[in-house]
Image 1 (cartoon, protein in one colour):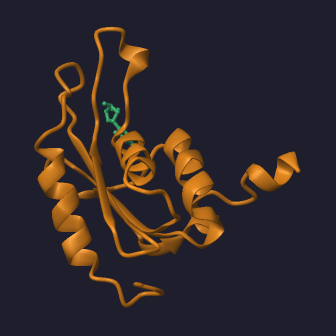
Image 2: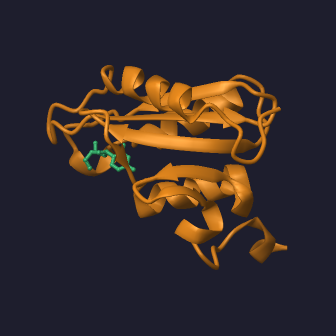
Image 3: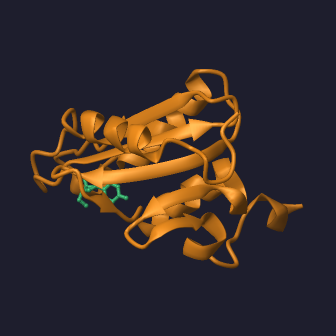
Length: 132
Ligand SMILES: O=c1ccn([C@H]2C[C@H](O)[C@@H](CO)O2)c(=O)[nH]1
């Protein structure tokens, strides 16, 4: 299991770049690829999928979360997303909430300002504990 900062971020970023090429983004022309590791070492990827009804867009992170559960579940430990030029971008606010649910405050993200914990990019998050 990859923990802390010893993960191969370059390999994770490469996977995000690769999947970004499969994005369906005919409206924004903004391709996004996302890649994550699960706590058993599995790699999950996703790309954005747009819709003629613009608001129906599926962000790349949605694909990651779906693949996490479709392939056995678990928790996300590491995450990165990139644009079509391979540059690291920040997950949108909605997707930070999606990722928080699946990885919690300890999830590590490779961001535009380096490796950050989820509780740095979504402080004081609303989450499952608030419902108990
Ligand atoms: O975190 C993000 C932010 C944006 N997008 C997508 C949605 C839309 O297709 C395009 C432009 O917003 O980028 C993602 O996939 N993930």
